Amino acid sequence: MVTVVMPNVLALQPFGSAGLIAQPGALLVLLVLLLLTIPLERERQRRRHRLIHLLPSLRLFRVAIAAALLSGALTRLNMAGGWQQWTLLAALLSLYVACIDLVIGFVWQLLAMTRRDSTPAPRFFKDLLFVGASFAVITAELYQRGMLNTIGTAAVLSVLAFIVGPGSATQLQNISSALTVQVERQFEIGDWVEIDGQQGRVDNISWNSTYLYDDIFDRYVVLPNATIDKVKIINYSRPSPTDFGLEVLVGLPYEMAPAHALRLLKDVVQHHPQIPQPERARAFLKGFGASSIDYALHFFVPDFLLRYEVATDVSSRIWYAVRREGFSIPFPIVDLRTARSSQGQIAAELSEAKRRSFESLRAIELFASLSDRELELIAQEDPLLEFAPGEVIIRRGDSGGSMYVIQEGQCSVLLQDPATPSDEVEIKRLCCGEIFGEYAALTNAERTATVRALHHVSVQEISHATIEQIFLTNQSAMQEFAAVMTRREAERCAFTPAQKDTYESGLMQRMFHAFGRLLQA
Image (cartoon, rainbow, N blue to C red):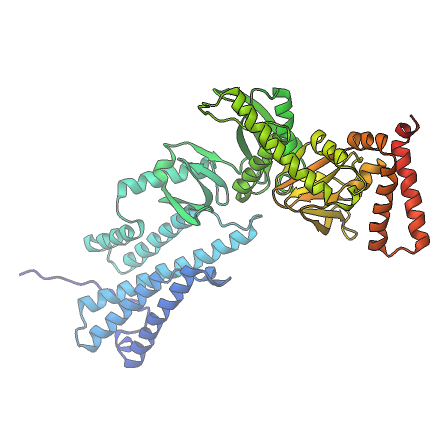
């Protein structure tokens, strides 16, 4: 016959005496509290409210309330005894540990508010502090009750196993790796890193795992801390948290001189709205490939979230810039065409583009005074240029040289914003068949506005040299150009007849100053 002696576990009751808990009113209150923790825990996990993160985990409170309910139920069923006392002790210890969790969580929020970037400290230290405090409180409570015997020690170890979790050897390795990360400060919460090929923002470092937020797929990547010691880590947020380097690789044709190619690549990032320091951009020749010379373009963006967007836009601009230079980005092909057939196809495509350009020029009022031969001269001598979305075609303040006719796409006309001189505001949009830059081209004046491509844009350039050649053989064209431009400006500004004459006279003087040496010759 074995006699089990139960220790006095009721030296201190967290919910009052067992008889008080067994009262119907007390049981009802505990049941309501238990049910209330369910929606609160759900809202805490969803984080839909701004202050919901201040609410601690209710798991331990739920255990305490459930244990108290069970103890009261056993008393109501006249089953008070050893099991009823143990459930009441479990309620007490769970309540203690829940209060520790609540206090540590509140302190952690205060620490996060005092940090410059308002990010919390790694959760690893919080968990370590929680386990240490819980162990100390549970041990002190059991020692006070005289329970630190074989049964009490087993109970303490069971609680710690519940907190730490299964797999003790793996857990110890994870804890060791987490300590290494924190001591060496390889990364911290908020850093953008790449670990074992996985890119993301460090959102949490627990004693078991590191959590990376993948912004591309809106998901978490959980990496065991033990694996971090064995793989390569790239921290994009160090040493500067606001400079993130990007690399764009491109192959350019052998026909393009390397000096020309390197200058073209660096020019692509100039005036890019999401590259605040284009002077830091660097272009490198990586090597000579089978079908191209391989280059790398390095530049910096202020926000890592923009990396794919900016890299895509820069790559697109490189394509357009190469096309404007009369080249194409090469790729490995097996070409079975003869040289004659290839030249014939290129000539046919060019002839069709020139024909469309001639038709668009013929429909513009400004060129009504020009003959078909003169319009064909423009289409034959001057190139068709293509621009990527967002690229600047002409910039305010630059000297005039060419005018442009939109063949395809849409452009935005921008002027200096009076409220913010460093910014520009859109005043007009130009569509297919419209002309811009004619005033500066005909008078050699500075550009008065910036014109930016909104979509893929193709324009027919009309150079200053071509205009000179036309005026040399058709001197009346200058007078016709001035009359058309004056009529358009008078309609826009509602000029009086006197103002119209004054404007036309001044325009003629400017044009004569720009082209007078040819007319005098």
